[in-house]
Length: 381
Image (tube, rainbow, N blue to C red; front, top):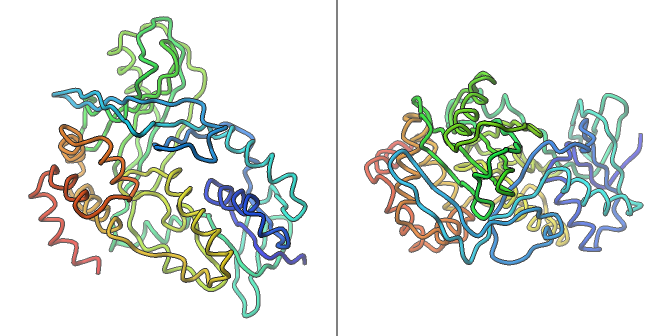
């Protein structure tokens, strides 16, 4: 039974970012690292986006940038100038290739395309089993989401950011490749929080995603019919579907970190790294993975890694509202974006604002909703 210093159970965004940065640091060459995942990471299975002011280590794999975005609902449209930010797109396959090209050159790192079946923490090590082999290690970084733990409890709200997206090529040149559609709530809400998200790369090419923040997933046809209707509204009559993607990202303030131990640290969605109020994962994972590598360099106990901030509470208030009144999402986001500074809003969503800047964003939201949520929030403590 082979022993490793670190085993990553699940090799998604958080695990690959962390391992990649461990390599870049140059301080883990004497540590043996094993990544386990039943997915070989050889397909373009998702699209990640994030906003940034400066260039990052991911610059080589950013395939498109936008300096402008559209926010819309049934009553108004607002063009958002994003400066000093840019909105960046990273394709899943580009990310996987970039990271694995680096990892494959390291003799101390192994990737096995195997399904994890058991993680058992013992006194002196952690036992990890797959469908093909058994291993031990000193520390496990687990990114396999425990759906039952989060979604069977009743204390904390759990919604889903769920979507189906089409990469399309149209005959009509009706798209604006210089502007992303961040949220278009002009689509029928049907008692939920529903919007269209559009990433155009040319006048005739774009990714269109029909997205919901709600409890329940829809039948596949409902997402796809909504995309067809939206294309028709744009004036598109002839198009080719190049590729499809779909996903469901849990949105919750459930305290995953309470499951962390001295030898097992939950990371990624399994560790609460996903931004609870938006479902964004790339930027949060980028931040947390950097912090984790620095933490490991200092030799600290991984059980102490997580730190709860004021933004956890802000997210909790929003989720509390959407949990009880899911149809109010459009009015909340519309109030935030109608007159608010896009730069301050993005800084707020990146969890980098001061308290005064927080107030600048929060005060624009429907006050009575958040006052009620504030009183209701005592049940979470």
